[in-house]
Length: 527
Image 1 (cartoon, helix red, strand yellow):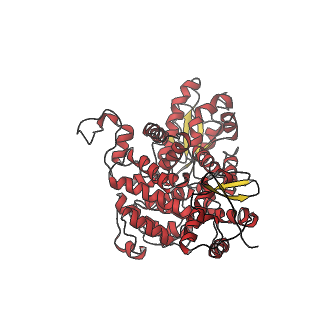
Image 2 (image 1 turned 180 degrees about the vertical axis):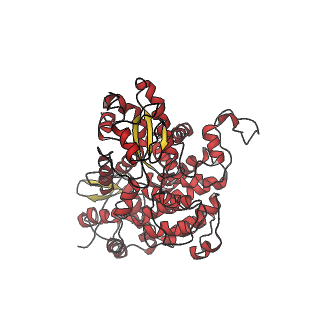
Image 3 (image 1 turned 45 degrees about the horizontal axis):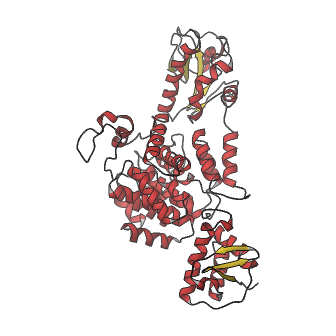
């Protein structure tokens, strides 16, 4: 069917007509005429790596429009192309408020996966491409924690204020104070040691949280959510600058966050690799010409934005799919988790689909609080009744939580048996006896780690007396992400407590990915 356009002028505004529906165009009437060149361009987009927004436009507009046709010049065709891209996410007629991405994944999970994969190699660099993608030591780091914090900020604060992002970042840091790599020195001081924070402008103790003129790569590593959220490139870069300047107010820190978010925006809205490269080079002055095979030869530890963002973007440019992008980034060495975090975010936006096995392995390592933020973020990115594959996968992850088996007679090498004990360490019955028999519990030791077991005393008083030992256990679990702790129904046997009594003590453990709770505890906590 030949494509045609309906045209009507009303109060100086030209409109394209589809039955009773109207789409307002710019005052330029040139966009209201037909061109064979434009038709061919749209057909090409439809059949060659088509973006979903282009497909939607073609089906809903070209095939159902009507009018007389006129020819467009080459310049007019280009203007029309730009208008098509814009109107699809600016005009409410189309039923959604922002551009759709190429594939099924649009939840910034790519950045988190990059962080997890790179975590193993941050302090043990590899220059190989064939390294194990995941291992027992793989875990999220501060990169993921602050990425999710920024996402929550975008979801909860439409004004994008510094006060709100500060409170959210501090909350996440307090919830996850122990993790692989730790928080950077200046950032940790900003988070936890206000009394020592110096105002760079005055040289005096600030007395409150103030930016510390940093150009560190922390500004870029947490910016991926910004790249997914907004309708225009200008708004994306503006909010990326805000997300950085709460701490990293040096021009290079702000530039790094903006470049990361801009690359994601461009990738998800249909720009080619060459277009992304040219924009980042021209807008931010980064050199993206050197291939990663050359970068790898001399690249070492680098924690600045200017030393991290360009090679991370180049890793994406040299990739062929999502997995290869992350592998290239990690293989450069240096701050591997941050490099891969930045690269993974861009690669997800460009390639769309994350392989199912990689997706599942990653979400299995994340706390429920992260998954809920990702789910809400993803839901806000789709409109109408179109089903979300990614959302379904997240639902599956949330509903398929692992629970402590009722009977445990053997453990994997990295698993720990958590049982109820007494202060005297008289492990004579119940789970305590099993801990002695099978898992290395020590007679006479009533508290803490011993062999492949962990003792929490439950026989010396009520719930309030037990609480400090549970809190101590949760802190220990956070400090040892390489281990998985299987919590039995402690206190619900010989000690005589109910699940409803003991489960609330473990509420914080729901968000600790390496702590597995009994289903009866989880059921109580979810009521």
